[in-house]
Image: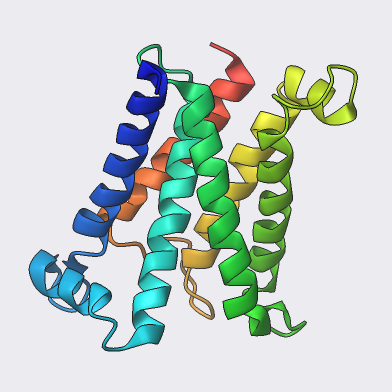
Length: 199
């Protein structure tokens, strides 16, 4: 196993672990960290529905963070491998969400736009993960070379996350996110900015 593979695996594991501890460990009712009780609640599967939902949320946040980080091109971070990890995690999150929350695809659902964005993001992430495999003259590879595809991935995943967390039926544009969850939003926005500027 190469050094970059070890680094990427460690980074991905740390990312997932951080969200489980600092995001899932936060109690929204008491507005305090309840790490031990919250993790016990999730991994005991006493309420399977809640456990699956929470694990899926962590996968979604980690996917956005990893894909966003790969687009930031940080010198000490193996961007390509982290992007691949983020893409696969996002695919798992997307497929599970599409099945679990399929009722939100109903025309009258207030979350329909967000679910459409999520589906588009899933396709974009899948396409981005193929850019290292497809020949250089394919449309997907060409889009990636001109930054259009990386920008699309960052924009769709970040916008999907934001619109999912904005409360429905309330005159507010502030997403209802547990504090540590804002990390994914910040990384996503930073990735969009860096991809546009190209610095």
